[in-house]
Image: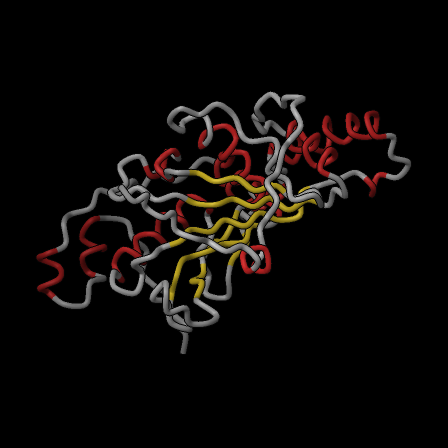
Length: 277
């Protein structure tokens, strides 16, 4: 048989609903406004739509739908301004020929990770704060005795960013991380690999505002992968997105010839003889 709860019209009726006398003594006296609401207020409450939030199966709110539909400002800049300029410069006939960012890989080497487990956990926490994504541990594929490295030993951490996390990290790197670096004079325009990918290194993660008071100074490497087929297209893409490149000089790059093993086998090294007095 269904029972209806008694109406709450006074302080004493609230205390009468408590199960035991001890709880009634501990509960403070509540002042309840028994004045009925107006018709307009009740109508507004009845007709107001319930808030719709994206929830997990456990009922935890994950993200607001309005924020989910918003485009990051760097991606919006790419869609509205960068694409038309690249089409005008390189003469693309199809929108899909325009280069774009594919992914960004951030890695940090930790030499003493095997002996210092707390340092490894701190480095992973700092990397997660910078990139907004939890990194994974990188291990050695084979043993190297000269470096005192064993197979399966943890050597560092790495994280791969795509989509909105990629644009968010690149925006903060260009506008916050690089300008706050000590003695920063621009990024190297010759750090492309020949297929449209760019790599740069930071000597101190403390350049990011999240890690201003970090204990141990650590660096990290950032690899930006694009769909560009040439270095000129990739450089134009990153420059239009705000990457502060150094002024490229017209001097030819002179690369030293890499000596191989057979070059040293034919040479005979002789010690100079001392002259007899």
